[in-house]
Each structure stands twice: as structure tokens, then as C-alpha cells.
Length: 216
Image 1 (cartoon, helix red, strand yellow):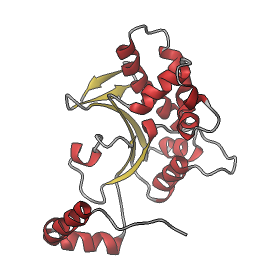
Image 2: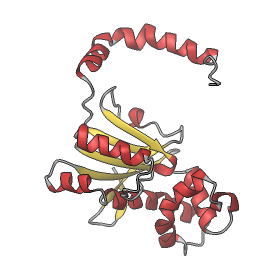
Image 3: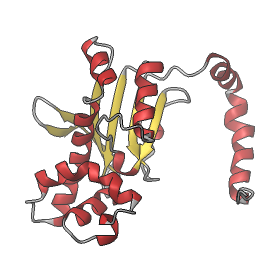
């Protein structure tokens, strides 16, 4: 038997405020979206972190971004093991059905998932390393990135480097999906890597030619 309970009153109040203002002022646009379906130009893969609000950062309207969020904005490598793969399913739908023109991976500063990966890979988080940890098995995806930055002694510097490695590992894994590489070869899909400094409001993008991140 389900255990669902009524929404907290503050959320109900906010809903009614939205319905009376934003929805009412843009009702025709919402009805168009409902009737014509979604046609997003880009897929955004970002972290579950509540501080990362990609629609606000880029001033996106409803229907503009196909958004997928997970722990540490990771993309797993392509596999056909018959398992349940939420991120891979979202990617497949975005590229093969919605035909997005861009797939954007956005990492960010102060990421808890990245910190957990750092602690787990350095042997300081036995709970995450246990077979029963969903978070631990998910951030195993980032172990190759950790190996590239493990030699950085300063904790803050290593964390910052690992946050950006999460973006790079995800970009690498994206190209392991046949439908992604096929779309890229046809020139209808491009991949992008971003990193957000939450406190400074600065977004950096990865430049493959320079092999580094730089502010946009």
C-alpha cells in the first residue's frame, strides 16, 4: 500500500500563485506546448544539487531544455546488459527521438557526489565502498577521473579538478553510445562540457583544443 501524503501547504500555496500569475500570463504558450509536444534544442545533463538551476542560468523557457539530473552529473559508459539505466534511457530519447542538436554536461563547485567519490577512492568512505551503496556504485563511473587527479595534494584543488574530471569522463562516455557518435558524424549533434562556480556565478566551458576549461 502506498504511503503518499498531501503536499506541504507552502508548496500548494506556491502552485496557486504560479497558476494565477505565470500560467495565466502565458496560457497560450502552455497550450501550444501541450498540443504540439516538446521540441527542445538541447539536452542538459546536470547534478541533482538543488543549487544548480540551469533554466535560470540560461534564461530558458518551458520546452527549451530536455533536462536530466543525477548524482554528480555523470554519464555511464554504453552497455547492453539489460539493466535499468535511467541516464542512458534519457540520452537515447533525447538524441534518437527528440533529435536535440546539443548535449551539454554541466558540473559545479562544491559537489557532494564528487566529494564522496574522492573520499571513497582514497579509502576514507567504507559505506560508499560497500556493495549495497547506490551512490557508491554510481560514482564508480568517476574512478578513471579520480586516478588522473589523485596526485594533487591540496584537498580543495583536488576536489575542483575532480569536479571537472566528472564532466570530461561524461563526455568520453557519451561517445561510447553508437547513436551519439552516429549523430555527431552526420553533423546534427554536438557535445559541450561546462562547469559552474556557484558562489561566483561563473560558467566555464571545456575547450578540447586547449585541453582545459575557460570562462564563457
